[in-house]
Image (cartoon, rainbow, N blue to C red; front, side):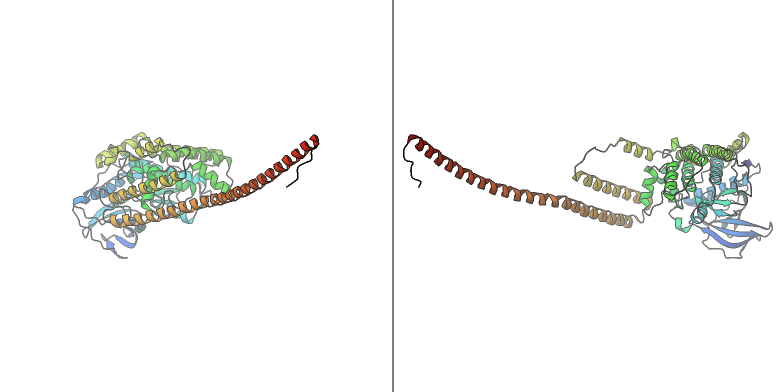
Length: 502
């Protein structure tokens, strides 16, 4: 449930140039916030753990490092909108903010410190530590947080397990890093921070984000990837790959296997047994996740619809297993977050009008993925092909992938284009050389038995000719003997002396 506040948002207007200096432990900001340690760092900001000595509570402080001039005015505006929005809303699954202030030509945002463990840590370090009911409730809470943001015209742009904190003591999740003034961990620096670039973590991007654009439901695709990973207990995104181009191509074209089919395959391989109620729940969850992972943004579900459906599955499973729907400390049961009522939704929409809505909420981008899917549907492979055709098709596909790779590198990273193209060219050459070796080896394996068969037939043919000549000689000799015998019989009949045998 979310409640909008009526108070206005007071923001410092001074244009700043943020210094790239890491605050030391013990540094006191505004004579109130004592820095304890850095939590995360990226191209636009840092996040510190600090202690509020006046309120006696632990807080998180976000430091904006980007200069607030020129092309970065949009980033600064989003940083301010983050404070205005979160300062005006009270939602159980969103971080609360306390203050936005300026000190030493640097802007700082003071916000709630989220206790617990990130969903990323849980999936990687504590797999299968939650029940299916808890997983569904967590998925519902994430979807509700995204719903609140999108209703107010805000796009998170980086929904992923690393930005979701789980607190088992309260049974609630917190969605972190709203806005573009967020910190990005060093291993995820591909999530570019310049204006006009792709924003977000690579393997959680939506197809339109992978194409350099954004839509009103881009967060829903990232939510779908997170739900898919959560319900399968996968440590990484299903699109994770060492090759950047491969990730982008798969995000735009690859359809993930249905959730229910993946669960069946895993249970069969691991020898696990599911309850009938759990099997039914997975069958109901599968189309929900599939609708969130739809490539075409026009046909993708909203975050609110996803949350409603997850809530329904949660209630059905609780009823089937005779469990309470309310949180229970003894069972470790998690709650779902209920949908905002009409008045709350109206207040959220007013906040979007007051503080400005993301442009993507008003505009619909062109759909590259739709054209790619249509092209793939039009292609029908031939029923029968010769031995040479598959090799030609594979070589052509490799070359086409190389051209696509070149295009994406030119588009994404101009400074490193030449080095990237050389690297891709070397990979393609290795693949082509290996294909040539394999093709030559296959031909040799096919030709060798044919040669042996020809030699065998030639030997048999020579033997047949020798036998034919022998039989012909014997036939001629037999014929001559029969002629002589016939002559002797004729002479005997006439009473004449038989001719002498030469």
